[in-house]
Length: 291
Image 1 (cartoon, rainbow, N blue to C red):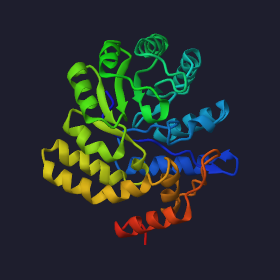
Image 2 (spheres, rainbow, N blue to C red):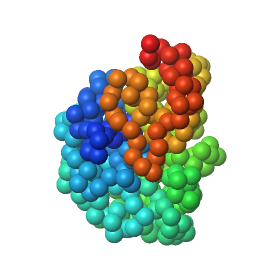
Image 3 (cartoon, one colour):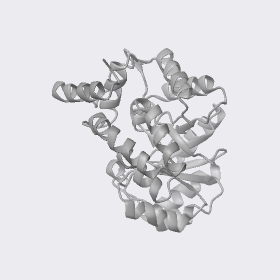
Image 4 (tube, rainbow, N blue to C red):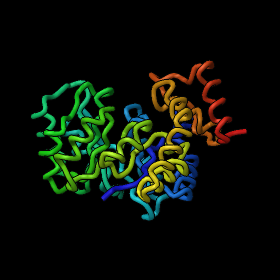
């Protein structure tokens, strides 16, 4: 259902408030560059630092700016099943096309706990769900066996796989087949993920490199594998620089350098260190993204 390039949007700030003007401009510009959908309120969107009211503002801004032309998949996962269900239902009221649901963090549920959590959310959801496996952030890894069980639910249509393991992604593809769409969650592994059955990516770097990542997917699906590999290698240094510190610190700094007044990250995140900013600037210059 959801395939292609889905930028995981940053949340622009102006002082202590969400900057809806800049968010709207970013959405419009990304659509003009051919992205296939938008994902606000994920890791890149600093969702844990946003109030309920701010999350509503972000979703409403994105849905209105997209105007039905591309899907909006809003991050709605928490580490509490009841709260997650409430968020999903609220997102649906605000007009999203689907929701991104992260594995419950901090609690460290068992595989059975993960299964029951996601099934409860799916049973209550009015919209399709993309599950989000990112053990480096949540301390729990949703295994392919668990995802294979969950893939039977009609509301669970995809997974953002950020385990960093191609073996795991391959096993997921074997177990789930065509039942769900596998989307890359690690930007440096987009091409490898496509090669083992992925159908796109939810990408933080998609804010900065939408045209390049869209072209990479176009080349791959057209069978021009070597050209796709060469493009992957060409942009890889930029990808490395964007994640030189914890996401979204580098991505926000890059967007600022590109002329988007997205503001800084919120505490407990801190702005990019000057030495790392110098590295990021150099890579953006080397690849012609800034002068």
